[in-house]
Length: 617
Image (spheres, rainbow, N blue to C red):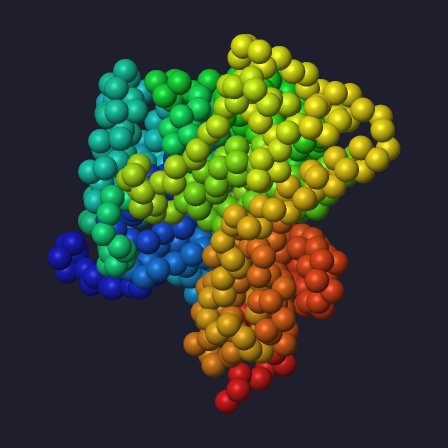
């Protein structure tokens, strides 16, 4: 029998792995643990959790398949990978759903115990794919994970069901061995997580070690693989998801502004984790309020803003629609407020666990009357931290609601984040009005922001509400000319933000044949596609919006330096519509709305097509 030392250790630059199984098989936990360990090893990484939409679909069905994709590398990467190199399938449904995405010649590791008549029928297989030749061309490794786990846990005081649930740790241990990852971090996590249940600690650790040892002792695998650490800038790193980064960003904004943080929200996928994360920071004075509905969530935040808090509310597309009237109230009262929209597939209930970019027009235009707000978008999971701080700064400085757009992919996905020192973060000045002399509730400063006077401040009594206000004085006004003036002032205030945000930067040549223009969570896919096209000799540059209303001041100047502009979006052309209407510039669109991130290869093909296949050679 081969020993570990005799097995060849092959070095790879990058690997994409997808764990897939029933929603009760612990695939999210398995993928997260593999990701945490991979981050600890020092690889650059990017992840894509894929949750089933049903809360609990029937076990063994395709609708109940849960997946977790991880792309890790010894070099700088920006996406979770187009197609996995390795598929770990815990049952036939997981294999059937994910096989079309696997690279040709890729590796398949299956739990062969699950390929019985019942599970094959549930997955609508007419014959066993492990026997009928349909997997020819792939590297297939049949591992009886369930029975090996049961053997390893013999004598442990766990029920048969609990033993079965430990099979994900066996699979994780096997993958740690196969890709030369240490198991120590996960062992430590098991001891912390299940400290109150010693039998769970024993069972899960035994399953993990059994999987690792199986890889070492079996003759099934003739080689194992290693990916060297990436050369990242020096610092302290943490693997962080977009939702966690968003929560920490608002916490940092609270500290830098000196304002107490209030989140009024209603749970909605995929934004719910933001309130969950923030609820654990009560020691920072954070107040989280789970309201009875979306409208109550935002109106409590408006009340908290009126009372002098850094007020935020989190939601997804359907919830943003419900919050629309209250956003108008915040616009009329001119109070600082940040609305986080973690975009998902729509319309209506749509695709609750999938990603999309289709709320841009709703964010920019989706209110009654002339009701402009600032709109920002995060580009990566870790960028959610920076943009949460920036959204807070703009909301406070300009006394306005700000909508911060993320999406399901970057919210649930993760990447290494270099933890900044608090002194590196920008200060957020806050000016509460306290003096009586010259106070009027709608008197404006140089930014056209009205004063922020906290209720209870002596001699600064004033009224706010949803009815139109008179200029300067803030009384209810139905005067036509005053209404025109106030509408214009509110629009100009938002327009003025362009003087306070960074210019649009071009990555690559600042003029030329083609600019690939994007926004939000498509950044990574576009960047890797542009880099691949450049290596093939194509002349192409990239620019990416984080500020969508107003656009950066130099936007038109940048766009007019390129002969062609290509805009890839996970919608049917919403940024393209805004660009064409704002600047009267023709653009090429690439729109794919599959509930998944854009594929790098598809964008590369579109770049080549847009350039007519001419790479200048």
